[in-house]
Image (tube, rainbow, N blue to C red; front, side, top):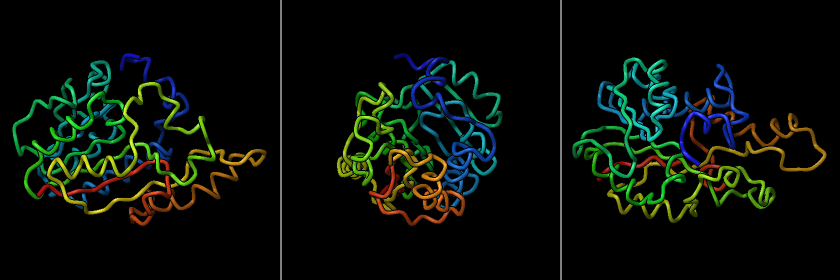
Length: 237
């Protein structure tokens, strides 16, 4: 499936709302908090796979922000939300930037779409300055509740997820690109329903409360297997 306008209304995107206080909004706010906490204010920041531009647009208030995406339609659309960011169409596997150009690089749910994610992560290592920060998120094959979902697990619902890997494999790729880990954690159990015959709203409260608390407070505390995504904060050596 091509990454065009249709992509943002199908599969895992079909039920997503971009409205304020939606799960998507809180997720972007959380990643903004992480970038501000670990990055240097006013430094260069790159979002690889910036999509509709909502996150890089927020980040441009604190950083000299750059965004790139393979989806030309999304890059054009994102100019509405990220007016202050420098945006362009490019491949994550061939980043069009100089060595050590960025203090912070964010790649949020992109590596699972790539035919060669190792090459992309190595490219991120190349463009990140010494002491700079990588913030990465991807579906978590090690999720404790993934067996409860079976083939209906969220990570399997997008046919463009061609590079799903175990957490240990992602961590090895990140280390091989010259990073050392600051935090490795997860985002909570939000892929409801997990149990038949129990209303989804009740399950959201029961299973999703810890992930929601982490997202709202910005305090990272969920172990790696306690969620549907693995999140990594790593520093370039």
